[in-house]
Amino acid sequence: MDDNDPDQPKICIYPGCERPAVPPHPMGGPQPAFCDLEDHNALSAHLERKRLAAAASNEEGNDGR
Image (cartoon, rainbow, N blue to C red):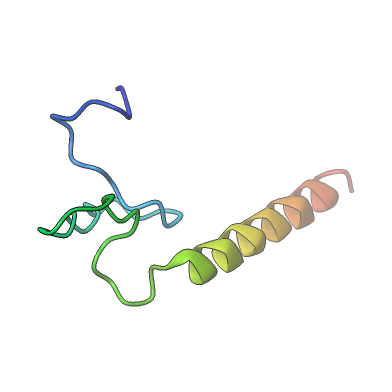
């Protein structure tokens, strides 16, 4: 699948979210990267990615025992 395909709807970039991103503003500008859920924003996405990375590194550390 090509991420730049204009026929494909843009998907929210929040980790694990499959909802479509909010459509662009009718007066112009770029399309938002997140869906319409209030808690899906740049800060919460960053924190969730950090949480997932920490959880993954904790899992890797426990596999060697």
